[in-house]
Image 1 (cartoon, helix red, strand yellow):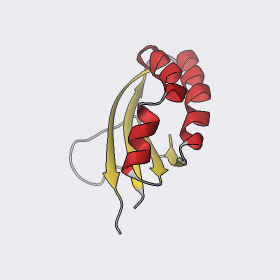
Image 2: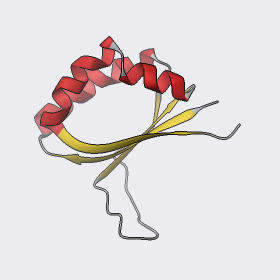
Image 3: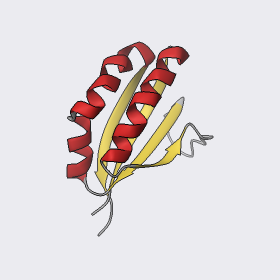
Image 4: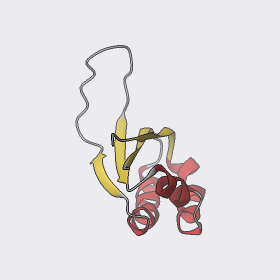
Length: 96
């Protein structure tokens, strides 16, 4: 069953963000991930949530998403991440 990685991102350094994206993209794809939303326009319909940037990545399963996050391929991007942004991240399983 598909799973969606959802990130609420606040960018702090664009230079490091570009480096992070360069490192992360290939690792996401190698685990079957597909970017479904990345820094598009956001319209809050309810509540006081005011995210700067939302990223949604679809993985074949929550297990694949977790494998990607813990992978050596993604580890280089994780080292750059704190210099680039602050984010909240979660995985939600899709419907069967």
